[in-house]
Image (cartoon, rainbow over all chains, first blue to last red):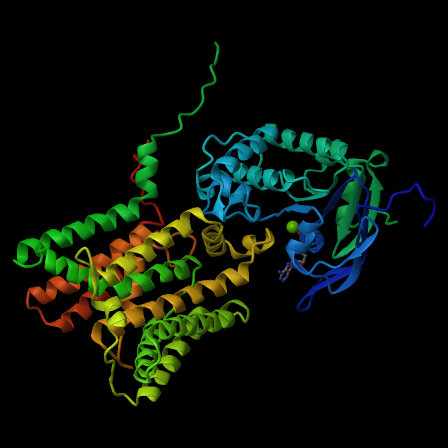
Length: 250
Length: 333
Ligand SMILES: Nc1ncnc2c1ncn2[C@@H]1O[C@H](COP(=O)(O)OP(=O)(O)O)[C@@H](O)[C@H]1O
Ligand SMILES: [Mg+2]
């Protein structure tokens, strides 16, 4: 430990490995995210970005490697463990329940209850706040999620992850179905939560967005992290080269 | 040129309501048509005595159908309910014959039903064996156990007035089994639509992985719905024993089909996530009315089976084709 004043990373991954049958999805990945830092995670399809973030959120259990939250070793065996450490994730597939209404999805797993009954009045008021905080316009909170557009669904998944005081917010391609104004709102959200000290991991194919919110960009290739760059010391064309495997690795 | 930005109208609340409730409304309409038909076709159908009789006979089906609605909402199925009813029915008679006080017997049977259901639920939820397989095995094992215990004989129950009252008694002229069944249905509807547990059941049926990811007890929820069918089957088995005054391993043959038909007819989706207890009540009553009406019309009781089977087929067909794909009461504009 260097000096007393350097704080430990919000999350520190060391040597993370994960195989699915014969496919080695991750082949030893290290990653540090500091408090209040936003790390962009980029790479070709099947590079292992989603798998890595799912391990952080407890959805998958790593075959090898260690995870430390705020300097403390943890072992996540279920998503609830990660949630207990205030790690929230927007999944690429959104993880919404189509048959439950907007409000129910926002509070999924965190239902407010009174005597084991759903407290719909309180949840409704809070749901309105959650959505308006993010400039999301969904007039009918009782619409079933199946009836909504792709962008609205994505917005709900983001609101759900961002609204319950996360300390690490992971977003796996959160803006792929969003319109221009909504993407801007998500980027504003990221900058806002960063200012509160929340760490963010952002996976996206919109490389230009990274320059607006990220402090650091990690590039993955075939299950390994091949490069890490500070955002202000890199350009778009360098990132593109790193993604396709023609860059100079560190 | 100036363009004014206008908000889209939220759409008629009535149209939304109709689309949302399409299935319950259609089963309600079908139920009324059946009632009307048998009222016109027979003299006795629409008499208080006959209607109360229908309620009394439908009670065991309704009780188990309420629990089965929860199971089917999780995208599961329980084929063993008829055998569970038979096992409880026979066990209750055997134990009562030994002279054990009846409230104790009732309690023991409820525990037995819950334990059997939980056992099946454990295989399904924690071991990942398809519900169809586990409960098909259960269907065979439990009926076999009932046959083995009774050696196929009917076991008479004698001189337990309190117990008989459960099956034969009335309160304000309404049969006790019907009151029990309606109370259970109301309780089920409350739990499903208003309680945290109901929300967990729907979530697990709609998207089990999402439910797991948000930290819901997904596996326990799945196991628990089979405990509910076990418990409900025990209640049904006890009520049948109390009504008939005997216990038999041949009770409730084909019961599971009637229960599943009632639930599916009520609009609960076999693919999980969507279901209605009001629909289940209407579905159960429809099947009971058809069975009763055909007998009153002196049509062979064997024919009822053909009708029940046909109803299952048509209901599932409507369920999968029309209601899920592009069916809507909304006008296309
Ligand atoms: N649940 C799974 N079962 C089998 N293979 C998987 C699973 N999840 C991911 N993989 C494999 O792991 C590799 C990395 O996938 P993923 O992490 O989704 O990549 P990315 O998100 O970077 O596109 C791919 O080859 C993919 O096929
Ligand atoms: Mg991915």
